[in-house]
Image (cartoon, rainbow, N blue to C red; front, side, top):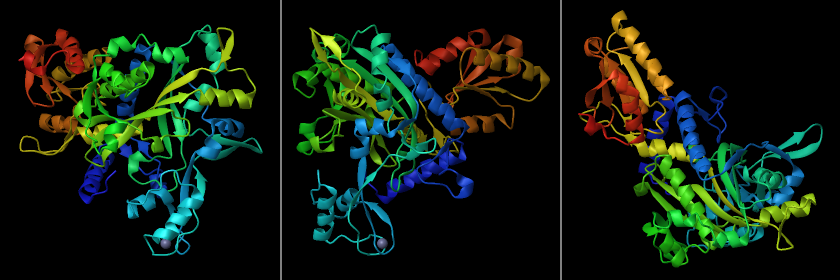
Length: 508
Ligand SMILES: [Zn+2]
């Protein structure tokens, strides 16, 4: 991620708008000075997050995943088995003079980009710091030895049982594997997903909403056998879809521009070894499309072997292009092999294998994982439109399906003959399942402006013509144009507009 000053300024514009309009507050708790890495969602931020979660749920359920929910705290032995106690670490170094703590790898790459530190241990990083003469960026002091710093938040159960807040939801899902086998009547593949809080004790989180110590993670898991990974019938449904891919080979040639590639070509050319894994990458892509991201601002980037997590056999990320930070990693799709179930079988001494032709086999796992706060921030960033001649305010062009408020309803004036029909129409709109807001305060222009500021795609106004002929005006946020619609047809028209099955122009 680049840190050019203009980009930092844009992030400040987005964050101050998000604060002012009730999307994101913090760092939290604000009245006590705030701890970095923690944010509150205001009323509109929470509505936006709910809408994103709805899209995510719908996509997983449509793909035949079942939702589960697990505790956020687990005892030490779970994290020992999962590898997080040993492997979920950042290398850190502390200034001997001013006490400031830094991520050693980031500091080296920042100050000396030509130095290759891929795969270096803590001791090797210490040597590198001495060799290249790196000092504390804030005071010029000597940097101390690099130490492995575990990112898990520790807590205690009862008096003295060591426990940790989960750094990812996935591990807690794997612990249920025996139960899943019964639930799915011993049939694989089986797919489940979880949406819930996870925690990472980042050493000094910067970049606002992108580095959080507490966040909401979404992950989908497919348990399957090796033969299913190759023989995956659902792949045929998606093979002609084109995705914006950036392969490992392309990156090694210095090419980071996404190339629209059909899934069948991607498998033929060997970008994906396994159709089931390719299907997972496609599903993750579809989830991001349904959250409102466009192809122009998305790319799917394969991890270089040096970037992969301790459990990953292959990994692709979804990245979103922002005006605040450039490309931002938002989602990982991992081929976790049978690492997790094997480890939990070994440590729990429970049988987590299935019988395949008289042999006991530990199933493979494919995973889609992402925090919701990053796409939430990226969507605000991508939806920002600055003030123009036509509109005297900065506004937000959220895709209608995920806009925090989808429809606003106004009586033209606060007169009783208008208030009654207006509140009736407001009820109809709510009953039809929209997130709607009723507003009677101020001039109609001011009320439109307030809705533009929070990205409401459609406003419905009840005026004196409504009483005469039973029509209302529907105002389109993007064009600021209005049409009259019969009120008994209103909720159907709104539903078509929000889904995008009709265009506003066609109503004129
Ligand atoms: Zn210092």
